[in-house]
Amino acid sequence: MEMLEEIERKKKQWEKELLHKKKFSSATTSWGHDLDVVYTPDNLKDMEYLRDIGFPGDFPFVRGVYPSMYRGKLWTMRQYAGFGTAEETNTHFKYLLEQGNTGLSVAFDLPTQVGLDSDNPLAKDEVGRVGVAVDTLKDMEIIFDGIPLDKITTSFTINPTASIILAMYIAVAEKQGVSPEKIGGTLQNDILKEYLARGTQIFPPGPSLRLIGDIIEYCKDNVPRMNTISICGYHMREAGCSLIHEVAYCLLDAIVYVEEALKRGINIDEFAPRLSFLLGCGISLFEEVAKIRAARRLWAKIVKNRFKAKNPNSMKMRIFSGCLATAFTAKEPLNNIARGTIMSLVAALAGCNAIHTTSYDEA
Image (tube, rainbow, N blue to C red; front, side):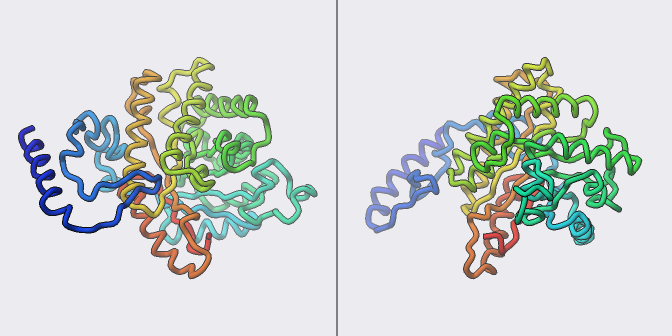
């Protein structure tokens, strides 16, 4: 305490005798908060290390959800991919795995996302454009042909039709001789952010939440290694909100999903360990790292204090992070390689569990 008082006294002396003699420009955070010229331990005088930060793998998980973090297991390299036909996507997935990817992430075309077959007139000009077209179980079989589903985890960026895609994936695994309890991966399955930021919802909010609850309940009993939902702040950020609102909307949606499951009589510790999150990584390195660390602390406290979880795994905010495409520029696109490097560094320094690096020409 005496040291902090001495630092505060020295800082005031420094401001009076040195700082006031120099002209300097003001600076703010990306959301408009004024930044001090210099920061000292005095700025952290109200913070208690064990209470507010702690150790990796220990509550409130600010420093990461695992004790050894990347020294024990590197983040999953999960490039978002999928385009054209099932055959083309299968070829590309195998290429990614050969190049060192340790997980797959499936991009679906818009007709698949909203439940339209490729021959539907409404799907004209959109088939296979922003992802792979999946109309039948055969398409899913081709996508994962030669890829052992008990050895690789797959993330599916799919929302209103998540239950259908999950059923197809289970069927493909069973045809490979892999039982449902041995397959792992993540369903995005976050319909609320579709209403807020994307617009691929099919059903009203009530029935949509019921479907999400159905998936949580089914996977709890039958596909225990499947992350039943990936709650997304990323899309709200890409739609224009600040990094503060990104976390706020994300946690609000997460609370709604938890309450939906609790209404069914499911114990929080039966499903919360399989909730995952998707947050964006922007170009402001220190802000973005702090955002992700703060989000983990907030979620840990919400699950422990509000929902009375007992299992520490329920309180862990496991995060898949991607570089924000809105931070890229269409002109001089090769400069986006440097931007993507900085944003990937954000994800690593923040302790994210899986990282997607956005392609340099995505602006």
